Image 1: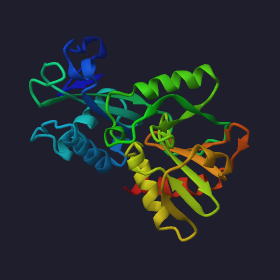
Image 2: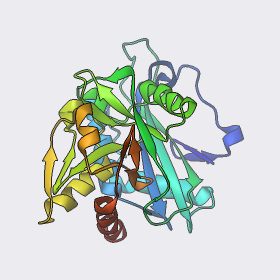
Image 3: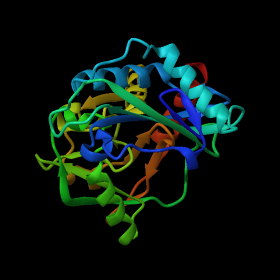
Length: 281
């Protein structure tokens, strides 16, 4: 089922305007949210990230786009998909409405939302092999736009194809300054001794929801020091652990990068605390 501006219809009946600016110019944003038994995990963070991103892209935010209204729309979408008592992956895409070329004819917005079943109500630690490599065919710009979840993700699309063609589970993206920005499907964290490091937003990484949650968790732990600093590709093979974070998986440990094998002890400890926050939040 598809929710288009509050009207829910079957996928076969949904229609995309050929002049939709999200389709023509990537003039849109999206949020992917994990829902468990109708509860949207970390909804407040998702909502405020979406609103901040709309302001950055100079979209007019409708008066009805309150947290309560959009939460109700997403829950209606989940219910229409028959997943209200299940675990679901929910996506809402906001696009700038109207026509125009690069210059929009108007600044208002519309939205599409849909929900799909997901098998894991809690974040689980995966112990299967998970190998990554650098993707250097294209680079992430170290700027504000790169931190947003826009509908222009062509670097991530081509990188995902590269990973599949070469037998990797994921790839790490390099920015225009030749530092690691993020992974294809999430933010990167590096553990060396008692220091946990993650790239700063200034390096072009996504303003991730789980990134934010984990940084808050780590800052309260006496046994670790958090560093928000650039990560050079040369640091990867010196690390004790590498892991990727995103809203759906939570924490994904990396087991291998080139000849280096990694443990996942810190990732396991953090995952327990993340699950507590997800249940209580």
